[in-house]
Length: 66
Image 1 (cartoon, rainbow, N blue to C red):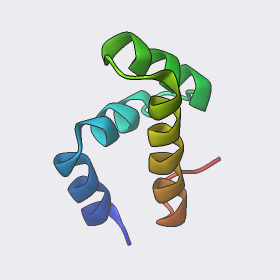
Image 2 (cartoon, rainbow, N blue to C red; image 1 turned 180 degrees about the vertical axis):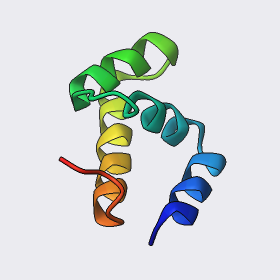
Image 3 (cartoon, helix red, strand yellow; image 1 turned 135 degrees about the vertical axis):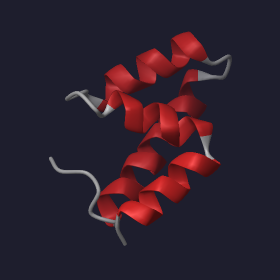
């Protein structure tokens, strides 16, 4: 999977778009959770789970270098 897959994920999901935007600069997972908590009205645990899931997908498709 490549850039087309990433674009599809980002276009179809505002959360993924926000996370990918955060990743344009080196950003720790916890910092992304903090930024999302400031932006969205949702329980921190749910936001953390969503961030972890999105990052796992990006890793699985080879879109995230660590």
